[in-house]
Image 1 (tube, helix red, strand yellow):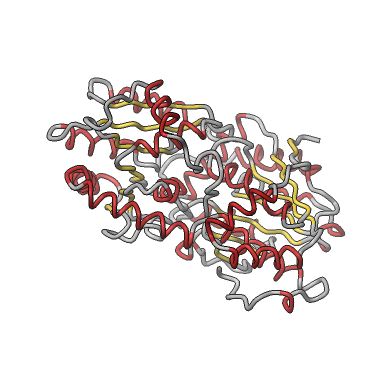
Image 2 (cartoon, one colour):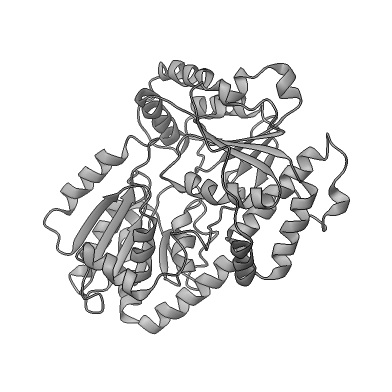
Length: 440
């Protein structure tokens, strides 16, 4: 059986749960405990395509132990696949986000073979099977009717869906119609699919994870020193944290920096990490290195996927953080930066405007070439008005505290679990506080 398993994931300690309460308030934690009581022992299997790298894996590293701490029986499994599969699914991913390139339909064979080879991953006793993104979505085709009848299958889409390539779009539609529920990161991305029941769960960050917890000043300074980032009071740091991906806007950030650097002292750091399911990463990184050659004060880093403390330190050291995406499912790096009280300049696409209120807790810019001059203008303004930048950062942190922390995401997820299981098990809704609609 081809698999990597995290079925014996740890649980969070009582001290860690108490720390969440100190951040979000005891009332919100009490709601989670009530939901946990209603779902005691429910077996949930989470499946994705990468153990390390990218927002989905980071999310699951916190979600699994958190839900286990609340009494759910949660496991995490990762499909095993060859390079050909990930090359094909990355191309498929790009097509679904609207990129114009060639899709070799012979890759469908690799897609189905890989999903079939991983079918043994599915736990017969799972009550809920939660599949993330298109890579493992085909697993649903390879389970027996008897097992499927007693399970609820959810598919979660973490990408920015585009309708531009109808054949690919309809291929996914036919597959996801077999699921009990499809979960999207924004109401903007709800596709007009026949037979698909949609829900919305806004993504979230874990404030106590390595990437987001408070860091001592000496740790921040030591990490910056290691990478040659000195005298940040004289040359403020502008930062872009993202996979090296064609939709993340690295080229546009570099062009905006060129404009600002002519007038103001500053430096640009673009940092990303490798991911086993993203074969494009290295090629884009090397292309950017060529583009940046000869531009002063630009540093590109392609770090290992577990470099969470380094990313945390860079975000805390930065004066301004950029996320000029041209397509974006949500953009967790926006919330990460806002949690650290940093002003963020983000592309007005996908899930980013759901996080940034333009001019209040960040700035929104047009995506692509049109946004370069806007980005440069906003960078200049923030560098020249540090008091305004600090206030913008503080407002950003409170927006994240209210809407984009893991406690809210866990609540939404468990409410959906409860709603699905209440149709087949004894009713649970009487145990819970009044719920919103399924779109949470």
